[in-house]
Amino acid sequence: MSTPASSGIRFLGLQLQNDIQRRHLTHFLIANFALIMLASFLPQMQAYLLTEFIHAPVAEHGRISGMLNFWQEIVIIIVVMIVGPLSDTLGRKPIMVVGFFVMALSLALHPNANSVAELLAYRCIFGVGVACVTVLAVTLLADYVSDPSRGKAAGLQGVMNGLGAVVAVFLLLRLPAVFQRDGATAIEAGTTAYLIAAGLSVLFGVLMIFGLKSGRPRAAEEARQSFRELASAGYRAALSDSRIALAYGASFIARGNLAIVGTFLALWATNYGTTVVGLTRSEALAKAGALVGMAQGVALLSAPLFGILADKIDRVKALAIALTISGLGYGSTYFIDNPFGGQMMISAMLIGMGEVGCIITSGVLISQLSPEHNRGAIIGTFNLSGAVGILIASVAGGWLFDHWREPGPFVFFGLLALVMMVAAVRLSRKEARP
Image (tube, rainbow, N blue to C red; front, side):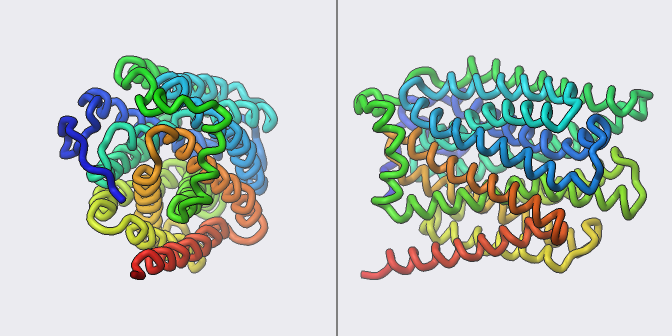
């Protein structure tokens, strides 16, 4: 059941919690923009880095990308198990700030990679930062906005995510080509792009220091649970509430989808551009970025619609709709050979809708169901499930990409989305019975 609306102020059409100010919500939205911008930039620059810096064969890109994502997600799995409960004991702001600073360190180190082993170390550092910020991105939505407005808030959050992705593909990813046109070498151009991204991450971390709410949640202070109790709260919640278990499963799908788009869509299009069309690596990267940008642009436009939907109808039903679209979009790539063709444009639009729809509806559902006193722990487990989804997407996706067909990772997660959709429909019907 939804909680009553708080008596807090209204901002951007949202009902805020009692002790939340406009600047808190504003900086929370900025954090979501920054997170997706940086998290989109890094994997989509990977093909450029592998080719120009490490000189890895194109035939090995899928395996290497899957391996890098695998170990990054192992790090994320470990870190979210710690930072979720830790945010209930130390407060939200320190975790968020540390996350941005750690991502900045990783981005600054990437141009120094001379081998896949070094690149792996830097990606694992990035995983620590991403884990910190991702857990807080969902937790603060529940902390800052009262339940009747959380769908619209998640839609606005999705808009900021989409803007971040669009800036990554249409600005940051184009920087190497711009610098090379001005006379820089491929390595100089890539290095400058990474350092610009690192500087932006530092800037966002500083903004969080001054913009987010300080202190611990009041209910967490009153509950006085030990770290061990908080660490197990997420698993206990799934056993006692099947809707929470469904939200965890949806997080697995949603984050896996995000990883596939960020890694394999750009890799598929970039490699096709260089090996079939005859483009240079930087030209192919820019063209691939346009394809990813289309998917993210549709996600940007769809985010408010899914947010409104999550406030207007039962949130399990809203999740089932998002999973259906996701399954159709990802599964349709089975019939595509040319990622630059017209059929891919339609699939990319459905992929963008399904990706943002699953993220928003699952996030709103878990925000509704997680009580304030152990919200960080439950949402930490929610993000843990998402990290496992990214892990599976990376391993299975990398293998399918190299050994079957380039659309393999998309088809695989399209099938998983449809399976999860069936579970959501069955749960919705069960709850509707008198």
